[in-house]
Every structure is written in structure tokens, then in C-alpha cells.
Image (cartoon, rainbow, N blue to C red; front, side):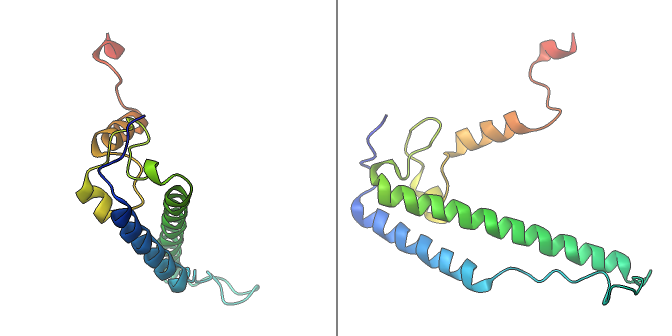
Length: 135
């Protein structure tokens, strides 16, 4: 495991403060309301409004899910700073320091760019793994 001397205590504190601020902002915003398809239990949804209502529900649901995921990432980053500060800012796959610009922009990240790209490539469904797959 590599030593993370590239990130000093002052930088970690500043990033921790930013994470706390981001967490508080997301928590204060709360989730988006998902409008019901019907106004009461016996009425039928309006055929003209149904697609718009469905789209609005989907958008709100996706935003709420993404907000929850970001809050979890922030919670995990704060826990790492508090429990194992020397590990904060190191890529969890290759254990190399994450570039300062990346960690400044997204202090919750746990992967360097190269490992993030590799993971996304490997996780892509239906992706051809090797040229020999088609022989």
C-alpha cells in the first residue's frame, strides 16, 4: 500500500469540510415529490396527462436515487477521512494517489481516472471482451 503524503492534513480538512457542506446541502434539499398518477383511488388517470405524469415520476425517481447514491458516497468518504485519513485520496483499485484536480472536483471519488475507465469498460453489458470471442 502506498503512503499518501501528497495530501496533507490541511487539504484533508478542507475536503472534509466541503464534503460536510455538500452532505448538508443534499440533506436540506430533500427528495423530489413524485406526483401520483391519480388524484383518488377510484378515478382513472387522464389519457392525455398519463405520459407526462409517468415521465415526471421517472425523472423524480431517478433524481432521488442519484441523490441517495451521492449521499452514500459522501458518507463513505467522510468515514474514510475520520477512520483512516492516510487512505483518503488513494485509488481503491491501484492504491495510487488520485490526481488533486479530480479529488478537488469530486471529493467523494474512490478511483483514479484510469481505474474508473477500466471499471466502466469491464461493467458494460454486451461488451466484447476479446477479439477471440468472435472466432
